[in-house]
Length: 488
Image 1: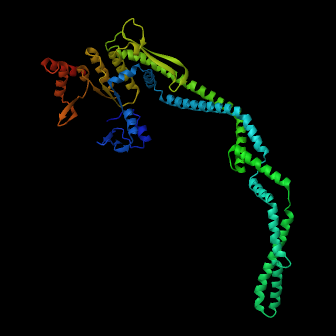
Image 2: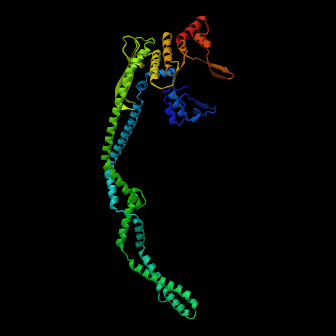
Image 3: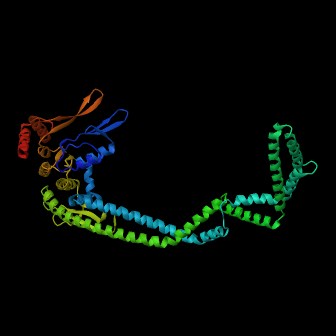
């Protein structure tokens, strides 16, 4: 397929990192029997979405049912935007509108959160104050639980320590006394038996260690005194910990400290909501102002395009059997701009003299819609860089001279783009520079669709058959020759 010099396909090729040839572009899709498929652009594998994106930038396929789009207000707006050539402005508007929506959503979410948090603020303050008053410290719970264990079993501990010390220091059977005697004996033995020195050193070490242990145990006993008040303080402190942990469904003091700090952050955030909301509101106001400004710019381009469409469409379509045709683009302002801007568009139409303009959807017949759509496509062809367009029976509901005029319009469109037309009307078919005959061939158990490029003589015969039906007459052949001669 040959691409137009004005085609934006080079940009699409660049975005997809594909090699670009301005004179040749081949789109190919392979489909296997089991349903799998592959897509290619100039023999480079691509995804199906990329193939569709490029395809729509190369070819506009206009089928008969697409005429119904003309009664759709969204399509009517798109027509104005194409004629206005305001794509860059629409892109900028779309970005700003998305930004506006994002800010508005953020503001609404924060307002809801602020309201809920404000209602909860007093309870949060109570929770934080309760945790702050507890003066929580890391590792305090473990230390207090150890102290509680000691104070609770104080008598048992003192008795045990006394027993151990007694085994060490008893004058008759004490370990320390026995070690002292053994050490003295070993030191005396050294005088006559030098090898006893090693034993002396070991006995000396053991004696000093156990003597020190005896002193420590004695000191521990003296420090361990019954203190009911301290035990009560420890129990009360631990009860506070356990109560807070149960209330907040945590297991440790460290978790309570983390919760206290988190609540403090929430309270600080609540106190700052007013400032944050005010800042967001300023951002929202600025975004709304920017959107309104861009929407006004868009409206100006659409008004100019609307005036152009009104004049040009009447000139193009009135010759198609509607000499008294009237057409107007009614552009109204929306209360609030949305994704497409601040305008609503309605195409108004009248085909007859002294008949008031009414929306196309309410007044236009199928044939009239076909003619209007052809006129619009012809205008769009001059405003876009689309290389090709395919008309699939756009001539529905027309015949005779009107069909001839429609064919002429399509022929002129061929000066700026490739036009392929599927038609059953000889007046339109005769306007083509090249003709292909599409037919079905029943082969074996399948029916295959075939296409055949017609020779000059075959062109005459096929157009003649359109004129006369299956019975080909000399008059029909002469008429076909005249149609082809006049068209070319």
